[in-house]
Length: 382
Image (spheres, rainbow, N blue to C red):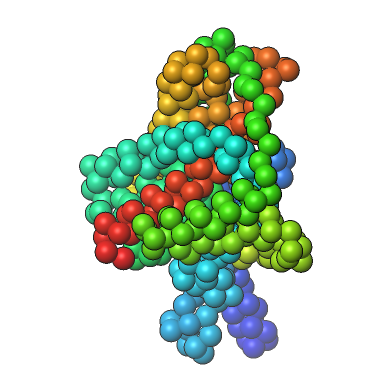
């Protein structure tokens, strides 16, 4: 009888109920909210579902992220090995290749002025950098946090790893991906606040046709120019442009399909679950995390505002030919930010079609955020 009682007691104490803290239960609740937003509300489910589920798993079973050197048998937790791919910058770079393979750079080539709007939307990054230093973060931590302002999760993870800020990688990545998912909620009020109804109704001229040769040369030239100036951007910009060259060359259909579909979705699963699993209660529930979440929101708002304000200036200089709404798409959330520009414009005038015009700044924003990351790496000698 004592044997049975002892066995049952051991089994009972092996359940998670006896090993979790209030913080773990809080994070489990947060994970469930994220799952609700992803599944019920449709907020970027491809990202939020794996992130939320990774968060759920690590707060029920923390050893799923156990490092191999800390394990008694020398074998780490499952998601620890996924997470190493984040730290080594492998998954973020592969995400960029998939984005390049899925995205038409034609609108940016047809309207090079879009580069200016993409650059203006990086205001959030540099504004958040100085604000993070003011709040007590060191230079490298501030740089890693500031990239959230570009609404670019892969670049945030990439820079945090390169600058050795792995302890902050979880909160930074979750904040970045959360704000990416909430683009349709965060951006419209800022866009409407900074523009008039008349500006939102502006119809832009149809973009000129882009030749196949231009589309092939663009990724090659951008790679050469950007990587010669900032070699540290090669893993991101290089993979982005390689994916796009797959798409536009027309001679590697199999590689294009793999990079934009199967490989892309595999990487999203690995990256999402590992990012979510970095949010254990112990690592996530502290003052620095709260600061990062607030800084991310401020950075994202500043980035959106920067793009819209330059869009207003360009509207004035062009005699009303540029709709300022497309400037908000200068953040890196491809193609969500461009869709938001289209949606807000259509609310003012249902016949207004801004999507392709907004894709130019959107693509420019991806390149701009990678350049910002490379600039920080150059500053800190990484």
